[in-house]
Length: 281
Length: 243
Image 1: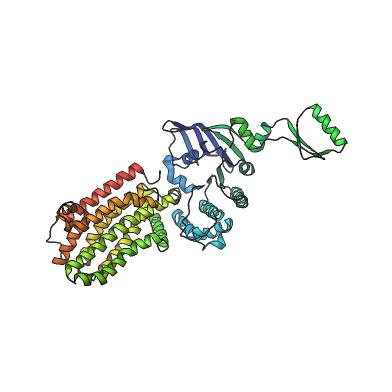
Image 2: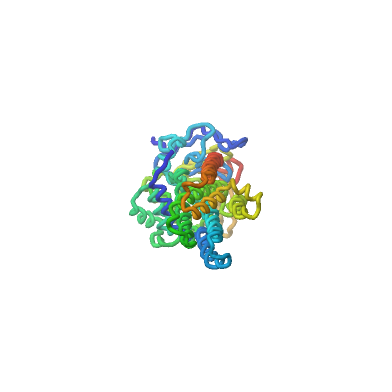
């Protein structure tokens, strides 16, 4: 199995503070991997280690089969990065912003139109950066991050502070990129986003991974024996335990045609995180 | 160390495209030109049309260009990239810090030399002096750009360039300007690059050449170029471009 990201026993200290404690992450080529945790959990530090912006205090950090810090040029040529503090040149047009990066990556300018088309900014290519809405800026930054067709895309809170409509558009773009073969490393504290997008997720808390797996498997692993029922004459939720007695009760309601809805209590990723860490996001 | 001419060219092109829409930089570049036009047309009449008053006006405008364009423009360009998070984006696209800085230095150098030459002609100086003028101004421009780059590296945003840079640059601007009014000031001014540049211009316009003149002003300016360069490298290595 090809591991595009391989972190082994990684520690990172900032003076006295231990930001990452013995971190082990392996990401398979072609997957969308979600790195979830609250602010200060160590998500951005992990991205900085993976993109050569920081050196680990100890441990191995390999990306695309190479040690990151010693092979920065190779890494930068093959990855794309979009974070909540990426910037655009606001006096330049959308097109000129893209031209700069096309020239830096030494790729033909013809690729720009194709990428702008994908992110829906082609008709706005003459618009100056400062005149773009927040969602359009985010799409421009995404277009710039994927212009050189990176094998691995790092997204640090890509939809933070975006409205739901724009968030959906970004999600659609990310799925399309992934379908074309781009591996995506996504950090977010939005569990709903992770649930919708990621093939696998890891929960990070206080610099440690407390759980890792497919969202569907994690939900089954942490499923509770609670059942929620709503009856016809009420909107109130009735919480019951999954047992013989509950079965008989439900059967009775069904016979009397009183049952309106019945749900098993599958936990959300947020609830699982809370169960594991006692900490809300 | 990675250094790609292609990347420096791309960054310089970007700066040039951005220049005309950057009102901060545009004003900085236009002010010395505007002042040279005003001084040349209004004040030269008041002081008479002799070479001394013309020299005084020329030095004033030229020093203004050195401080405002050479030092402040590069400091603001670097600080703006930090403020707007574009510096991080550029560095994560495989551009090395020396490539990034080379793009800024090149643009600042081109802008300041264009302004210098415009001031030279606005002041009505004779073309025969242009060669020496460019040699002297080249050295002082390099020194001022180095000082400006240090200010840019130390400043987290554009506003901070004023706070950090103003004291240093005012000293370099005001001490040479008041050197002739006060003996103590003159003693200090002899150690500044601008004052020595003024001395060289005086010698050039009086004798027509610098070959037979004093060598000390050249030495002082060269020491400043080397010292500013050293301060720049120390600051860059210690602080880094992007924390």
